[in-house]
Image 1 (spheres, rainbow over the protein chains, first blue to last red):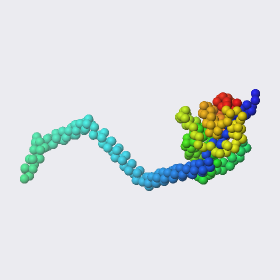
Image 2: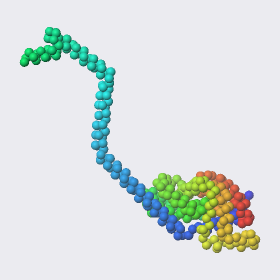
Image 3: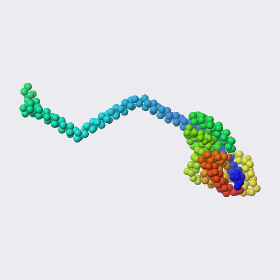
Length: 132
Length: 198
């Protein structure tokens, strides 16, 4: 079997004529110049973006201590309000009232025995009147 | 383009690539200057359109510039940038499909003095007495009838003189595949160009 290059020699020399299909030197000079401009513009854009991010980083770096303190404060406030919220639960509030009423009831009974059946208000009023 | 020429070129690229990787834009400019003609030829012969070739070539170099830091030197820069160019052109062609794409404006006067052209234009058989534009048109038509993969191989081997081994690296296929694609493409082209290359 003949070599590829022998079998298609004429075809290959015909195809090689296509090497002449090339734009002139001015085209390549302009192409390189255009590419350089695009490349430099991209570099500038990149460095501007880099500068922006650097400044943002610096700004937040300086604010880091204050930011930390603020975050800690917010967390403390949130946890306090959470615990307060839990104790403000209606059922536990009712139980608390009932408990204080019982304590108060006990105290009243003790006062009654000392003031000969006069209500605390009456006793108060009476004392006040008596003193005047 | 012989293998020795390619090897000599590859040696010079290493330093330029290293400099470009370290942010030296001028080094990359030198690589653009060195490869723009070869890559223009590759893209132009695959697309048969000057404007498409121009746009694609800008994109190829822009992509190479953005990716140069990731280039690890496992292949030569030559193979790497050719691979980028071939892949981008194949993707472009798949999108473009069969949109007519003939550009007959850019032919240099050198063809008039090319012995091969003189031979074709002065053959005894009047059917072969063709003008530059007609011949160019016929060649382009024939190439555009090939599949994109076959056209890529013909462009690199027959028009640009890239060796089989290098084409196989660029396309990521075996040398056997390159040879078989070439053989098939040559048979097809010979059938299309029977009046010019019997």
